[in-house]
Length: 148
Image (tube, rainbow, N blue to C red; front, top):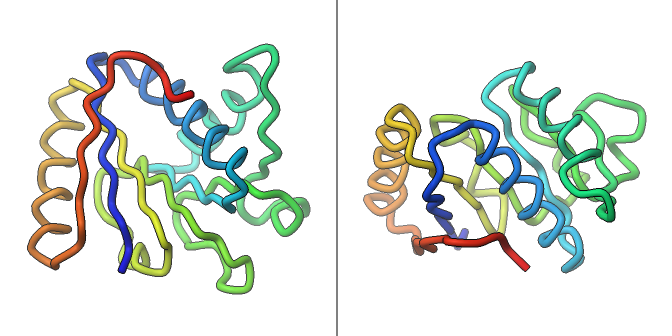
């Protein structure tokens, strides 16, 4: 069964949420998992793409936008509408969309990032309740710093 982890940030900005998403993506990729970042829309996906190149000077997270020629050869993909193809064998999903993608249960792990922005809090509370009602194991991580 898919394990769901909610990471709760003390910040309110989109930038802090995207920065943490980059750091978490780096950690997940370093552990050898294939990861799909699910953005709210194409604009957010492109912001994530740019952020993964610049979030830290000494970091490198091999990634590509879904549909790009490199998407089949990198461990991290970024999309906004469709799931990665099943043959990619992606183990982890980092969901930055307000709702739950209907195909989330294909993944071993799902990470949700919450910050203190009211719209995000409201949307992610609903996600938490939906996961719980469906019987998925859900765990919250209250964060003060960044993942290691």
